[in-house]
Length: 271
Image 1 (cartoon, rainbow, N blue to C red):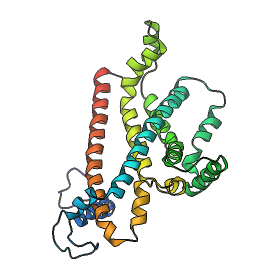
Image 2 (image 1 turned 90 degrees about the vertical axis):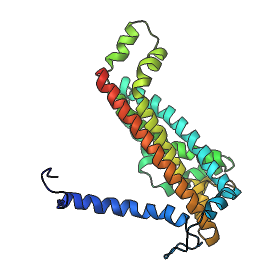
Image 3 (image 1 turned 45 degrees about the horizontal axis):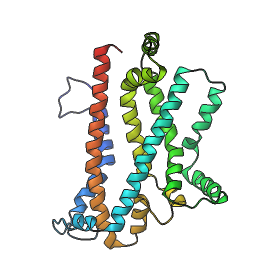
Image 4 (image 1 turned 60 degrees about the vertical axis):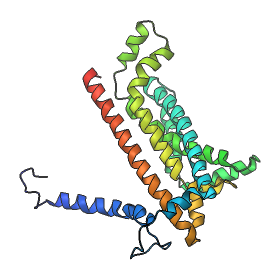
């Protein structure tokens, strides 16, 4: 973009960026708009302003239970996936592993397999093992999907600082665990937070695996899908969606603040 160009005469790239962002985000903005609409039907013109759908959202036990199921599964998957991804990333970036290429390819397989194929395969496996379908099976499937994402995020982070810092701590008498805790962990903390947020989001939004592997405890995407057949259930879902949208904006802003803070600390410390 030309810095000397007047703002009222944008170049082609600026026009494209505006059109692209409008196409992506404008539909999302309709979510909070219709959540305040007095009519239960999603259509223009709006019938008036109301908060009844938020009140109904709070007083809908099935909706809140599905939300809590997704939160519980998402938190567990985020923590476990990040732990496994961190251990795998440290092993890949710090040690020579025989057959590292095939091992990495095997770990990344869930990223390239279509979700429905993976879901059917896991359903067959779990059925053959006589394991009852529940939130545990959904969490296991989500962890299988999210661990490669966590590993990729943390590999890029662990390759971004000088390994001699760890070697210096070991030479000064620190144990391997304390070296990780006092040296490695603070440096890769932004990557850990990014991995937690990414894996939680993937698990929270995932539908196909949950559809095949859940039982009587639906996650939020499953509940929303089942509610589409009943118009009276949609407005509280819109209210919940608007609430999640606002909370997601706050979380993303916080994550960006953490990332910028990490960059500043690295710049000031010369890492």
